[in-house]
Length: 326
Image 1 (cartoon, rainbow, N blue to C red):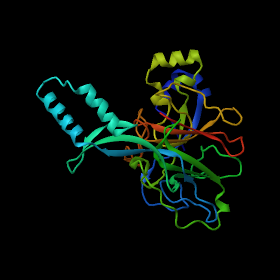
Image 2 (image 1 turned 60 degrees about the vertical axis):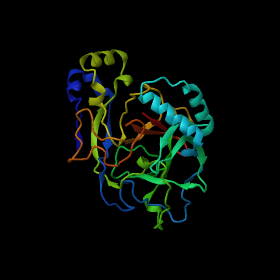
Image 3 (image 1 turned 135 degrees about the horizontal axis):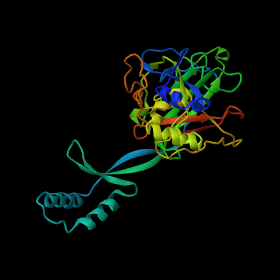
Image 4 (image 1 turned 120 degrees about the vertical axis):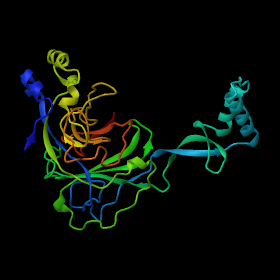
C-alpha cells in the first residue's frame, strides 16, 4: 500500500504535478530491541567477523577548561559587581583582552564550575587517540525499504558515524556507508566495538522500523518555473505538504537553509539520488506520524533541529555519496 500525501489536493488542482512525483519509504523508528538481522536504527550490524571495523582519526571539536589566574578572577568579579550596580566598567576592554590571552586560541567564554572555580572555556580540534570505532546509525534491508537506491547485486545498507563534531564541510559526524549482500555474511561479528561519544545526541536510541511507502511531489525549487509560480500562489506552505518529514529513504528533500543546490557525483559529475534522511523530528506538514509515534524517537539532534541527507551515485564503483545538513 502506498499512502497519498497531504498535497493530494494540489495534484487535483495541478495535474502536471504527477510528472514530478516519486515514492519514498518513511521509516517510522520506534524504540525497541532489535537483532543484527533486522532493519533498524542504532542497533547491532550484520558485520563479517573477518572485516575490519571502520574507525575515525579526523580532528573533532573538544571543549577545554583553562584555570584563570587569581588576579584576573578578582577583576572579573569586580567588573560583574559594577554592572549589577549600574556603574560603568572602565576595565572592560582590557579585561576582555587579558581573559582571551589567558585562555588562548579558541576562546568561547568562561563559567563558574560546580566547585566554585572560575575557568575559561575554549574549543580545540584534536584527533582521537587511538582512532575511534564508528557507531552504528542504521541498517536497512532492501526487502523492508523498497525505495532505497542501491547498487546492483546488494540488498543491505549499513550507515555508521563518529559521534563528534568534526570540521566541515559538512560540520558534524564523520559518516561511512557499507553496502553488502546479506547472504555473504556467513560468520557475523558477535561483539562489536564500542565508540567514544563526544556529542551525546549523536548516540541513537535503538529503534525498530515500521516502513510506510508514500507518494511525494517535487518541492517548489524543483518544479518548472511556471508550475512553481502557480503552486506557490495557491499555497505558500506547499513544500511541507509535498515532502514527508522524518527518517526516510528515497523521495525528495527540501532546502530550508541554502535553497536548492545540485548534488553532483564527485566521480562522474552525474546526478545523485537521495538515499537516506536522518532527521531530528518525525512531525510536520500534516503528515501522519504513525501509531502515536514520539516526535524524536531516536534521540538524535542534527544541526539546528534539522536533518542530515545522504545522496548516493549507484552508477559509479564504490557508490560515492554526499552528506548535507540543513
